[in-house]
Image 1 (tube, one colour):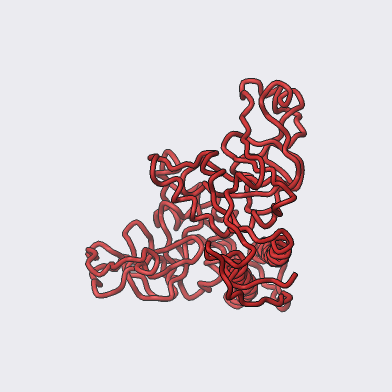
Image 2: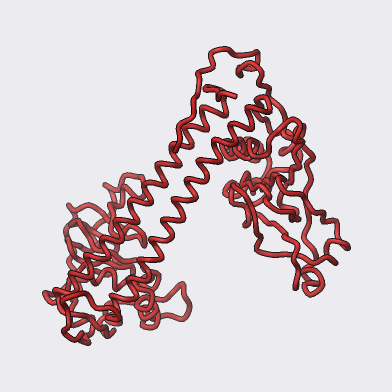
Amino acid sequence: MKKEQLTISPKRNDQGLPEGWTIQKLGKLGKVSSGTTPLREKHREYFQGGAIPWVKTTDLNNSIILTSEECITERALKETSLRIHPPDTLLVAMYGGFNQIGRTGLLGTAATTNQALSAIECNSEITDPRYLLAWLNGNVEAWRNFAGSSRKDPNITSKDVRDFPVNLPPLPEQRKIATILTAWDEAIQTARQLLENKQLRKKALMQQVLTGQTRLPGFKDAWREVKLGEIFRERKDKGFDHLPLLAITSSNGVVMRDTLEKKDTSNSDKSKYLRICPNDIGYNTMRMWQGVSGVSRYEGLISPAYTVLVPGKSVDVGFMSYLFKFTPMIHTFWRFSQGLVSDTLNCKYDSLRRIQVSIPHLAEQRAIAEILNAADEEIRLATEEIEALQEQKRGLMQELLTGKKRVSI
């Protein structure tokens, strides 16, 4: 990212802002309105075949909105109170509790909205909508002050939106701040696209190497069919109360439970917990079909709701951990799970041991695991890059949106 020339702003006005800045209510910066939902009973007339974007809370991305999940027809526009908002209209979510309120979007195309959104058509003579988008994204927690005092399910009203305070620099400075932050957004979006490409490449790679569709150089021996009970045994050790408590997640595998839950687990009753050792595979019997499994790096205790697998000498635990998270394999775990509905499905060892899989010899398993580990490392580095860019942008927003540092105009 190109570094902008910023200067420290020591002079402050009576409002505690840099000279030339003011605090304005959002309603003073544009026209605030909301939309509606056409009757669902008239889906054929109001939605089917529609081409006019109709934006809902789930479409908000805190950035530019170019598409919407649903569109409406010209008839819906004529027969309801909906109106088309022009590009550069700012949208704010009002409903849905603390997890939704304050989400934003900036229309990149003309669109309508439902009643859960406030639409602000900005006065371009006094404000830049991209600056307002950045301001709202940087102050999303402030909506809690508006929503938390009156309702069981906190929401905000159109009046709350109109009364929301904005630190407003002169228009040229708004535009420059918006341009700088937009450049960071573009860099973050580029990094996200690279991450997505790496994830897609890994998915394709797993399809090729975990099925034998593509063989690695130097390996020609035929793969063999085995049952999981032939290459794994179940560990049922108990009575190791001195060991730490562990948990298994779908994304991070086996982790320390106190780190995951952010609380002290020293007084937990460990008498029924199962022992797991390094290179064991642990899995959640009720979530194996959702990919909740992982290789342990620790010796510790896990809930009896989990199952612990000890690999035999003929398998590489890294290879098997990838196979267990392979989509066709996860579907197999689902088919072998016992239960009437998804909430009660479980894949205990007695069921899992009967599953038949095709695996290569040990050396090829290890080579495949190394390739997939390398792909994971690329994904990890790409994820860290995104997090670093986001953190740097947050710091820059704190300086620019408060006027602590000024941009040169």
